[in-house]
Length: 123
Image: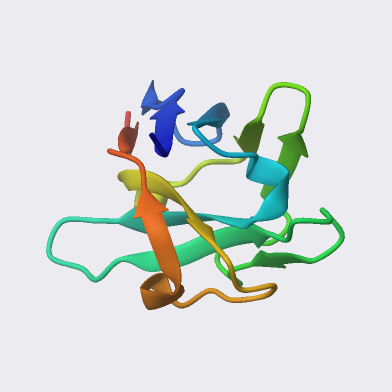
């Protein structure tokens, strides 16, 4: 059974850090592009960062570039999103998803999704 499980979300003050984890089961995560998306209330789901199966192709939305880092640990079948210098506008539910496409950020290209983890940046 293919499953993606996110964890690591929570409440953090502006300027703080969180590390999100996306643990995969039922398939080898390093065979797929893995993406992190987020959705804030009243807004569309948007791509935050993606990493290719070879870990050499990465993408960051301009709003997070320089603050977020995506990485993968194939031995743990897990992808991480290190989030630093968090801002209130980063508040959203964060999802990870997998895609068979080599390089894509289109949500429609991702066939399996996790349940999401809430990130709240607030004083």
